[in-house]
Image (cartoon, helix red, strand yellow):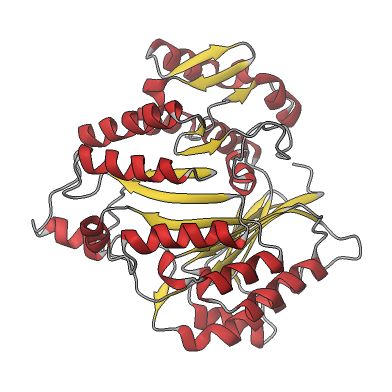
Amino acid sequence: MGEESVSLYIHIPFCRAKCAYCSFNSYQGLEHLKAPYVQALVREIEGYFQPDKLKAITMYFGGGTPSLLSLEQLAELLAASSRAFRIEEGSEITLEANPGTIDLLYLKGLRKLGVNRLSLGVQSLDDRTLCILGRIHSAREALEAYGMARQAGFSNINLDLIYSLPTQTLVQWEDTLRRAILLEPDHLSLYPLTLEEDTPLAQRVARGELPFPDEDLAADMYLLAEEMLDAAGYEHYEISNWARMLPGCSCGELGYLASRHNLTYWRNEPYLGFGAGAHSYFGAQRYYNALSPAEYIVRLESGRSPQVGVEEIGEALEMAETMIMGLRLLEGIDKGIFQRRFGQDLMKTYGEEIEELIELGLIEREGERMKLTPRGRLLGNEVFQRFLPS
C-alpha cells in the first residue's frame, strides 16, 4: 500500500444529546470526561512518533460532536499531531460540527487553528423532521451556522443531509435540497436513513408510531437529488457524495472539492484512527480501540495500548475491499491501477463476477475502468456482495 503517508481520524465521542437514529460510538452526559479524554488522545497520537515521521495527508475530527471541544483542547490535539506526523501546509483538516454548538467566535478560532474544512450535520431543513430525528438545532439555526461559517472564512463546507425518513415526503425532500443548493455549499453528503437496532427511532417504527421507510420512495428521492444537483453544477463523484466544481482548485488530480479524507477510505488506502472505538488500517492489519471512553482513558493513563482487537488483512480480502469501496466512486475501478497494486489482472481475478454484473446492467465498461451504472448505484449492495471472499 506504500505506507509513507496516512490519513488521520480523531474520534470525539461526546454529544449534548444522542440523536434518535444514531448508533455511532457517542454518548451524552459524559462531558466531565473531556479533559482526561483529550490528554489520553495526546498520549495515543504521540505514541506514533518516529524519527522519520509519517506524512499525514488529511486529518478528520469526527464523532460524536467534535465542536463540543474547546479551541484550547483542539489546539492541543493539533499540536500533538504535528509533533508525531508531518502535516504539510494545505493538508485537508476537517471538523464535524453540530449547528447547535457553534458561534462566530468559535468558528473564527477554528480557522486560526488551521481547520480548513467544516462538515455541518444539518440532516434536514424541515423542523418537524429534525424533531423526529432528535436533533438539537432548528432549520433556522442550521442556516445561521452556515452563514457564520462563511463569515469566519471557511471556503470548504460540507452539508450532511438524510433522506428516506419516516413521514418525509418527496416534496419535503425537494424543499430541503432546494434550500441547501441555494446556500452554494462546496460539498454535500446525502445518506438514506438506516434504522439501526435498539435506537429510539427504530423502536418507534417497530411499535408502529412511525411508518417504515419506503424503499421505492427512497429511490425516487435519490434520483431527484441526482437530477437537482447535476442541474446545479455539482460533480457526483461517490454514490452518496457531490462536490462543487472549481476551475484550478488545489485538489490534486481532482477538479472539484471532493473529501480527500474520505477518498482514503474509498480507495482502500492506509489510515490511523485515534480515540474510543476508532479503527485503523495500516500495515496489512485492521485494528480497533476500546469502545468505552472511560476504559480508553484508563488504558492510556496506565501506559497500556488502547487497542482491543486486530484483524490480519490477507490479499484476497484486500482485493475484495478495494473492489467494494472503489466501486462506490463514480470513477470506478481502473484495471491498470489494480494490476500495479496487486500484480493481478482484474478480469482474471473477478471476470466471472464482472461479466454477470454487466449482464444484469449493474456495471459497465468505460475504457480501462469498471464502474456502476445508474441502476447499479441504486442497487449497490447487490453488486458489492459478489466480491466478498467465500
